[in-house]
Length: 445
Picture 1 (cartoon, rainbow, N blue to C red):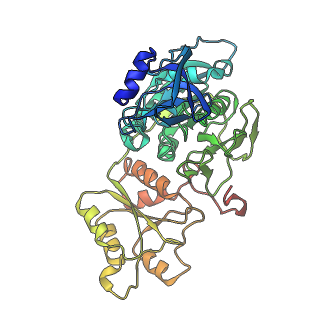
Picture 2: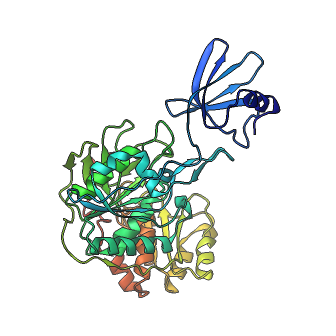
Picture 3: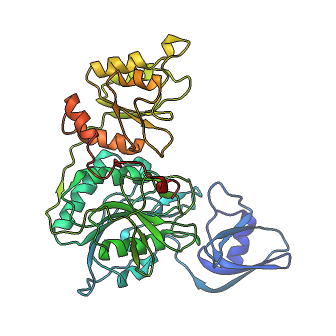
C-alpha cells in the first residue's frame, strides 16, 4: 500500500495498479505503468515501469500532477501461450527448472522470485516459434538454482534420456545461473551414449527487465538444440555484454565468473565448442566433440551425495578433514592453492593437513586435489610440499574445475567404493573434463 495521501489521490482519479499514467513533477514528465509499492519501499514514493522496462520512483509532493492514460497491463502474470507442433521445424523439448530466466520482480519484497511457467517464457520470446517445434514442454521444478541437488540432476537426466529416445532432436534446459555449471557437469556424466545436444541456458537478469539477456540466450539455445550436430551437454550464454552472439561450451569446462555480467560464463582450459548468433549462424570453434547420432541414450544416475568440496587457505584447520570422515562422508575434494598445495611443513605441526589426509585415505576415503586458480592444472612433483602431499595417496585432479571434480567424484562413488577403481575413473576423461594438455590460447577466452 502507498501512503494514505497517495491512495486518496489514486482513488479520486480512478487509477489502479497496472494503469498507464503520466506524472509531471518539477517540469519533468514520466510515463509508464503504475506498479505496486514493494513492502520495504517508501510509501510516499510512486513507482512506475517506464517503456524501456526499468522501474523508477517519484517522490510524492503537493506539486506533483498525475493523469491516467489509455492502456492497462496485467501485472500478476504474462498471458499464457502454447505453440502448435510444426512439421517443418526440428523437434526440441524444453525442460524448465526455475532460475532468473523464469522469474520476475516480487512486489512484496522487491526481490526477484521464481514465477514463470514455460508457456510464459514463450510469450516473452515469441521468436522461438519460428526456430523449432516444441515436442514437449515440462516444468521439472521452480527453484533458485542454489536449492537444487543430486535428486534434481537425476530427474533431469532421466527426462532428457526419455525425450531424446522418443524423438526429440535436442533439449533445452532453462536453469538458474549460480550453479548451472554443477548441473551441466552432472548431466555430462549421467547421460551415456548421448545422441543430441543438451543445452543449458539461463539469464543474469530477469525476463521483465529491459536489459534481460533471457531472449537472446533462449534463441541461440534453440538454434543449437535444433540445428547443430553436437551430441554434447553444454551451456549457451552471452559471449559479450552486448546482444551480439553466444558461446556454446562443454558442460564440464565452464564456470560462472561474474555475479551480474551478461557474459559471466566462460570456457575454462578450453575453447568454446561454438559461437552462436541469434540469426541462426553457428560457427564451430572446436572440432573435438561427439556428433549427432541415433544411439539410445542411457541415464546412468547413480550418485553418492556424501561428498564434500572444501577450500585450503592460510591458517585453515586440518580437523575439517577429521570432521568430514567422522560425519560419514565418502569422498572429499580439496581445492588447494597454486599447483594443489595444502598447509604442509608449518611451524606448528598441528596445522599441517598431511597427517589428517593420510588418515582419511587409510580409512578408505578418496581425496581429490584441485586448484583455486581455476585455470591451469595441479602437479604432484614441482615442489617439495607437493611431493609430501602426493605420498599420502591423494588423487590429482589434472585440470578439472573443483566443481566438476566434486560432481564427478559423487558420480564415481555411486558406482564403486574401491579406492583403486575410484582413482582409475577419476583420472579417465569421461565427459571432456580433463584436457590432455594445457593450451595457451584458452586463458581468459
